[in-house]
Amino acid sequence: MSLVFGFRLDNLRGDFYGGIVAAVVALPLALAFGVASGAGAIAGLYGAIFVGFFAALFGGTPAQCSGPTGPMTVVMAGTIALFAHEPGLAFTTVILGGLFQILFGVFRFGQYISLVPYPVISGFMSGIGLIIIILQVGPLLGHATKPEGVLANLRVIPKYIAEPEPHAVSVALLTIAILYLTPARLGKVIPPPLLALIAGTLMVHFFFPEAPVIGKIPEGFPSLAIPEFTFAALALIIEEALVLAVLGSIDSLLTSLVCDNMTRIRHDSNRELIGQGIGNIASGLFGGLPGAGATMRSVANIRTGGRTPISGMLHALVLLAVLLGLGPLAGIIPLAVLAGILFKVGFDIIDWRFLKHLIGVPPAEVVVMALVLLTTVFVDLITGVAAGVVTASLLFVKRMADLELANLNLIRDGHPEIPLNAEESAVMERNQGRVLLIHIDGPMSFGSAKNIVRRLEADPVFNSVQSIVLDLSAVYAFDGTAAMAIDDMLQMTQEKNQHLLFVGMQPQVTEVLDGLAVLARVHSADRFRNRLNALRHAAYVGGSPHPEDVPSAEL
Image (tube, rainbow, N blue to C red; front, side):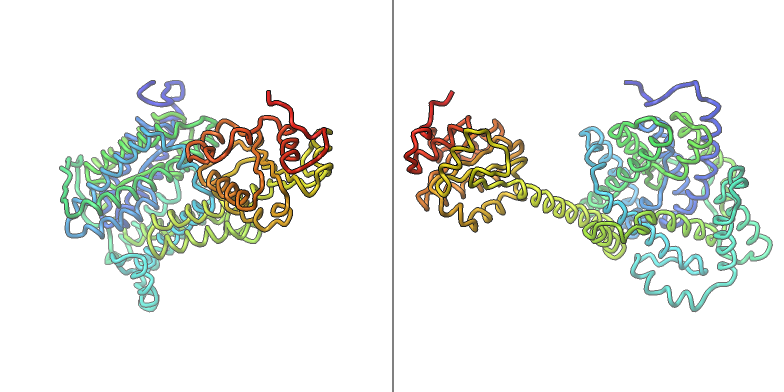
């Protein structure tokens, strides 16, 4: 396995242009995310450099460009607020989050992360978008963001609206207008975020010099910081690191899918997680924000010709050159400009595609999406995802249980719901009222097992026949709850002095039943491989006098 996934030298020109454009797109966003996180603009730039370089070098999506993203910034802002008295612990959390991502990749969890239901992802991303918008209302109107979180900022929005700072509002409106109204042809030459950054900065410099700006930021290459750690904060560090790792993994792999669709190159999800983890560890060691695969800069890279990891690494090196040469200029960028850029980022993150089709979406999926969105905004991100996954899983189990229950066929006479051969049909016709054939077609799992037993308990035919044949030949999936349901059926038939016969048990069914000691209660003479013999035996022990119903020996 090569060191760099997808590395090749036949696309150097495209990778060069792609990396340059991706860096131009990333610069204003990195600065904005740094300010929004509470760690400072320079932390956003450090994150873009280190995550961008190492995720490209070691990752599994050739054309992806990584760095700080909206969702990761929201989580990091909470982490920094949580460790306000010991800020070094926040970057220790970033490092541990990167380590968790490496473990996710090593243990091949990438394939499972992609199984998160779309309504959960939709609600989560829309919730993230709303959080970013809520947190930027204050800076848009010339006020500082409250560090206490989303609810605190929601409560003061009416006050901010009543007391706007005209200069900040003017700059923010100019920024948003440029972002939305820049002609597509001009946008290909200079990305709208960069154009807004330049125009807003010039506007403040010449007309509103008193407007708040980023301020002085460090110059030169960042210095390595030794991670801080305290046992008292261990539980919180692990919890926040897991949130960063899971969110960063989902965010990155979603962007990987976008890159796949654009380049027709399939990514390696587990390798991508390892690369992202290495990038986040490096970022944390140098005081940078955590990052993930960034859709906006990845799309810009691909559209400009980037196809290999060279473009992702080059985008990070260009940002490093900007840091080393133009660091002092970044300090004069107005906060209102960054707020305007982030406002559009939040608006774009909201899943408008799903929201526009709510009327046609199944109600259960709307409920899941709304639950995740509200929980994400008003509680926290990981609780939102957990609540959505659990709810979606329960709804899925309910749907599967309904389908499994629909595949329970109670065959009473010669006109069954499943095809029987002529001899089997004849046995059933001769023994109406004495023999019941139960045929289960498909999986039998914990979702449906108890309901199957309840349905049989309420069925008058089941309670009146003398012999019951349970046909499990079409059951290809079976679990412990289903085995306990079979045990309940045995108990029910024994209490009614009925005969319960088994036919066609697959090896996996036998293994589960034997492991839970259910088969120990079934006499070997009541287990058949052939359905016709099982039906004949059921008729025979049920008192049928017909000579054709005498069972033959099992082969």
